[in-house]
Structures are given as C-alpha cells and as structure tokens.
Amino acid sequence: MSNMAESKVTGIIQSLKALEDDLDSLNDKVSEMKKQLSGKTQTEIDKLLEKTKEMGLKEAEILINSAKEKAKGESERISQEGEAKLSEISSKIDSNFDEAVRHVVSTVLKA
Image (cartoon, rainbow, N blue to C red):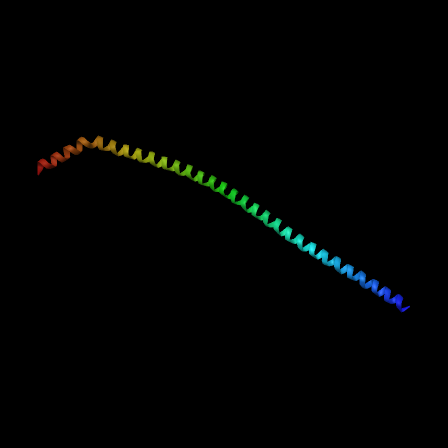
C-alpha cells in the first residue's frame, strides 16, 4: 500500500510541477502583454498629443487672425479720425488765416 501512496504522491507532485510551469508560462505571457499594452498606450498618447498641438495651433491662428482684423479695423478708424481732425484744423487755419495776418501786421505796425 505504501507503493500506491508513493505513486499518488508522485503523481500529485508531478501535477503540481506541471501547474507551476503553466503559471510561470502565463506570468511570462502576461508580462509580455503588459509591455505591448504599454507600448501601444504610449503610441496613442503621442498621437493624441500631436493632435492636441495641431488643434491648439489652428485655434491660435484663428485668434491671431481675428486680433489682426480687429487691430486693422481699429487702425483704419484711428487713421480716419486723425485725417478728419487734420482736415478740421487745416480748415480752421485757412478760415482764420487772413485775420491772423491782419493781427500780425497790426501788431508789427503798432510796435
């Protein structure tokens, strides 16, 4: 009966050894899958980062172009106001020129 018990124990040990080998193999496969998943994750992160940069650049271009247009419009408005003021001043100078000359001549003659 002891031979039979030893045979069963040996069978159990062999089964446990085979199970242990299977677990080691599974652990190796899981480790490899983790590496692959990590690589794929990094690739996706890089792609998303690039897309985010592109979107940011496009948005920045839109904002810059909008600011340029606004500044251009403001510049034109200021220029028009300046020309209008210059025209007004020139008109006042022209309309009061004769009186200013008379005043200067009168002042010079009195002296």
